Length: 610
Image (cartoon, rainbow, N blue to C red; front, side, top):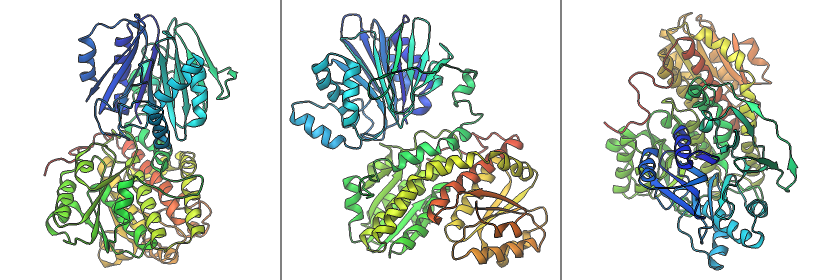
């Protein structure tokens, strides 16, 4: 998830691009760049590693005249954080410059062919192949729109693509597939961006580019086309947000925006890793090399929310493979972890900079173990010191309480588990394909949760008046109970604890009163009857029970006081929608308690000190 802006108009293009990029910096802030179509018939590209302010200093030190340009703020998912890998990317002869969000799944084969044909690549990104493909087609047709229409069928993956050519000085061409683009309609100026906040101070008239559409815009005209090149009429919408709201895309808090980002972030976590052709799972070569080693066990190390993703990973791996799995808090593992050179150590860290997790990784390597990191940030310390890494591909997460990164962590643990299950012949091909198909339905299932928001708010209103709450579950649902309790306590300041349902009678029952609600997470699995019995034991002691259950589970209605439902599916694929319910329940509870949701007291997004 990166920030894109394109501008054609009468203002100073460099200043406009910088201004717009600053409002998109939440979408990516490891590097940035601009390409400006100058009045002397050349494209000038300026890039910088770091925040937009670094790019601003470089631009202001140069004299650039031009009325058309493109800009990009990067959240690296392919290629290290370097100036060469920053966008925009240019073609060999500097005729064309492009910016791109998304993933080009077949970039390796495209790049190999282009290099064979004599093209010289300057970066290690997948995006650069687009600039070279466009150059080939532009040389044939001398028309940028036609060049983009011609390369679209050759690209597999996702893209929000914006391009300029030095031979068409006022023109911008853009196309989208699975990544958002929005047009800003101005007076004697037009904009194209990945999100409305970019250009909101300049215009509130927008056109949302639909899937597969292409747009040609200049300072005085714009036309939308289908991917076949046919003209299309598009509706202009009028935005009513103010700029403060727009930074969060109209949401009151970053946390809520990031909860609603999850259909997209789940797609990004899956994209490039599951094949539509043969339903296989593939990872980068280094990861597959690590996973093919003859390790005897797996240790997972993590902190906070990532620890609960690790616990879920344990249940997933042990149910789908024959491997024993140990989960440790990273802060404990670094001092007391198992020193086993025949183990694979998986570190889960959203930031890639969590001090205890980095120390655990170093301890594992010192003892000869292979290490694999799951993180959201390429170029972070964890990606540099581990033997291999997998990116969550979630995009920036601003709210302190982890939401979309947690569900992306779960997705990656599911993919690793399925991948290894095939390797160890623990799962049949039909069952494997079944899971892949169900994973692809997850974005739709998440969206269905948003339709029940009124019921979630109603229960959150009741929850907001209590001082303490319990969360219970069994199997996969026990780690989720602990994560649900963590979310509630960190943003609403309500004391909350998560337990295995069968453990309540071993002590926690002493704390139950009729003022202590219990949130029960259940699925009709092998422990369903046990969960119903546990709920009965709880009810006998006075608390109300809020059940989170399948949409067609009728039996739970006899046992729970209130019910929140997720789409009925296989257990593994139900965890994600149920997680979204817990996130929304915590969010609205905190909202009703007037808590500072994005910045809870005493907490930081990344813990980089002891």
